[in-house]
Length: 144
Image 1 (cartoon, helix red, strand yellow):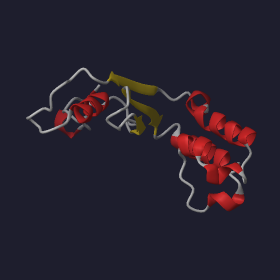
Image 2 (spheres, helix red, strand yellow):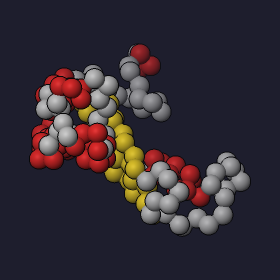
Image 3 (tube, one colour):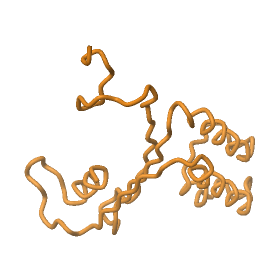
């Protein structure tokens, strides 16, 4: 009877029937010259938070000017630095948009996972697997 119960990824029993989580991950510092690699994830409970999260993101996206929405992909760096946005989207409105997007985890009470790996700790390329030091440090940011 026990082998009919749902199991976790590595075989442990699941407790409860609402075990699905979505983790939305982003990274920064992928270029070799970056001083650190940062990986951040927001963990969303699919049963309790996903629909609220999607609604909150869509609400925030409503503040993107209409003529910029087609093909718009959220990138804080792009929203803040892209000169194509400067004429059609005021700095104060871009800042308000970024703040609304960045406040979503707190509003949703969603856990955040964070990993930072300082660059320059590895001096030689790795032979197994073949990776340059910056690639391995990036990999380690995901692994931790």
